[in-house]
Length: 200
Image: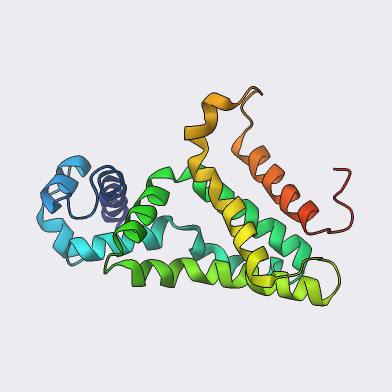
């Protein structure tokens, strides 16, 4: 694939992500995507094979889950691994609000596309659960219910997709994405009783 073709595919994906977030999957047409991307309508079929495949490609390209494999070596130790994953999810929620909105819409609608979404999202939640279980077994995390703790950790990380709705309540200067992700990860580790984080 040439650089020009690659650039066009990304333009189509960016356009689709924007429109799916704003109008929903069913409310978005192939023609609208191509108009937004400045692309020929025929390119949707040529590159992707239809609107459904474009949706899949948007999830695959923009969701943070595709980084799991490259991060694998950094996810072996419970404390540092959990800290990294929480930061990755917070980063995703703050930098990809459109995709977060798309995923939320699909779950709310219980759409037929959920199977593809869960295939891409669940590996991260499974890895977080594994790190929590291993951390408790090794005595570095302290909690009673693994299921409830998983829910609390994931909810904390995902809550940042709602950040814009709560911003009117904030009185402190807005922190960078990196600083916010760091704060969230430290909050989780302190809640789990991980040593060395109580005074940070």
